[in-house]
Length: 358
View 1 (tube, helix red, strand yellow):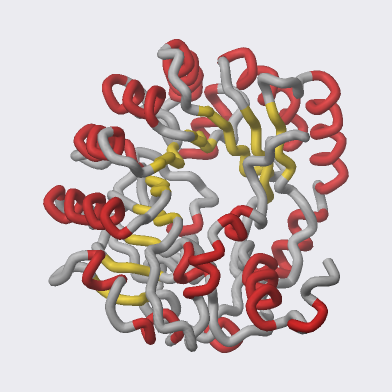
View 2 (view 1 turned 90 degrees about the vertical axis):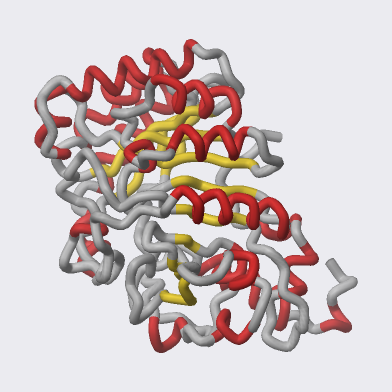
């Protein structure tokens, strides 16, 4: 059976964590996965960036100049390891490799028991950080939307030639021969959809291990996003069929995340299990409920680490995990809606007398 990298079933490998989630459980356990945003600064300016989109609630209170001080970063990583966090993903906000202490951060992660990964634009994936990631990270995923120097420059408002630089970085990264899986994420729109096959072939030739294709979000309105995505749905699927037939093999996997966007803006539950499973620590040293509400103090803020450690914050006062009511506060698209419903069903929705009749 093929081993899956993307699945809502992962959390069910942690029954102790699931048991600790409900308000009536008196135990607090560590989050399984922390999304950590070292810096809000970025060396690119993607036109579709959610954090810069005034029509999206995410990033509402984000300050570009924020970054986690190195002393606080050290403390956060030590705390994550000591309380039992399983994995950390370095992401944005900004570009993680633009963080001035990224080499020290990656070295500390490499010396720890934590599994770690990174989401990056790939333009700075070189030198010691690249080597540390190649040999020690579980995965790195690079966001690329252009198919050549000119289109890449247009999408990201950068100098021409950077597309070739990123391709060279991919090749150099794979040349280290490390264990890390390197994937490419393509945010797909009407301009690049017809180029998906050629992009996939170029990525594979450079040594990439996988391709993930996702829709472009234009705002927080699910119906508008559905309408926008549906316009090119047939083209996307045609390209993916072609890629699957001509390029996918044991060394190159394709993940189709371009699908009908379900209307998850209407939540049917009053507390969010994901908050305790995969929180976000922002570059402002604040903790947020999830990456869909990061840098929105009105919707996602759980608390600040400015005057306390992450361990102190997390392991005290369980009430903080329930102050956000998804049915009232979260009107945006949420990819973890299905998982929240699955967890709620697992915890509350089964008739105990009938559980043995699997």
